Amino acid sequence: MNLAEIWRIILKRWYIAVPMLLLAVGLTAAVDQAIAVQYQSTSMISLLASQQATKGTNTLPGTENPFSNFDSSLNDTADFLTRRVNSPTDAQQLATLGVTGKYSEVLAASQGPFIMLTVQGPSAASTEAQMTTLINYTTQALQTLQDQENVPTVDMIRSDVIVPGDTAVAQTKTRLQDTLGAAAGGFALAILVTIAVHSILESRRKGRKGGRSGNSGSGSGSGSAAGSGTDSGSRRTRGGMDTDTVSARFNALTDPRDLLDSDRSALISPLPDARD
Image (tube, rainbow, N blue to C red; front, side, top):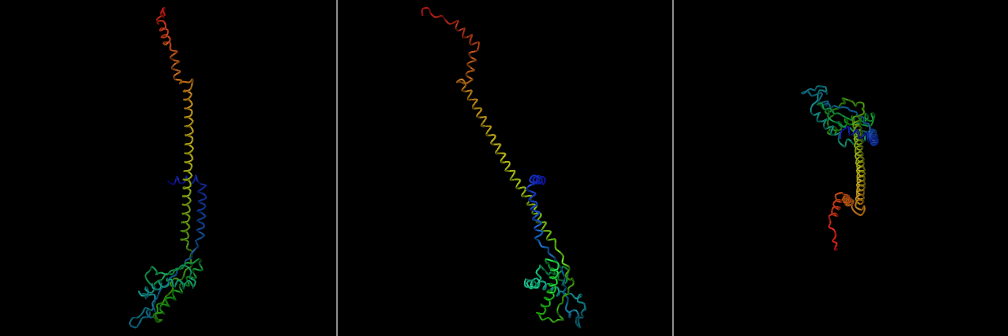
């Protein structure tokens, strides 16, 4: 079945296709309204070396610049911190603090102890507030981890927000994809239903047409047989004998040669004996 045939079926069964297409439009609108708009905000935190590592010692002087003293231990600490904040236990604590939307903390793609924070929420204001809470919680979690290990203050790894939480932006891509998917599915369903109903109606129409043709043929055949039987009967019963026999006898009686032969026989036949 090609596109031209499908289009012909749609035009022929428009009274089925139009309601189905309207139903597909309604379904698409319902899906679009049912999907809530989500807002997203992002931020980035960097881990910094401790004050002692930055100042250095008498034998190994420091740079006095925390942004020029990134070593591999900071990367390991950033990885450990993201795993801790993404854990179910911390997720429950964040929910009690108001971070009810979907959030995540991952290491940034660039090399270094950089943590990317992402928060989603139902509104721009709510998302931005949740991002502020998540930043503060992550900073405090780093401090708590080091306090549990009794790390001196001068040796504690520090954190700094290098990209504050930006303005929350509506995420329309997912909603648009879901809406387009619903529209495509509804349109395809409308076409399939139209073709299916068309096939059923065509099968029934051909069945009724075949039944009428069969009945007409049987009736004409019976009539012809009855007429033939009547004619044959009339030929057989006319005058009590077959018409062929009557015709043959009539021809025999009216043949002149038969009359001459009968007269000649009468003339030459011997006379009766007088003595008789």
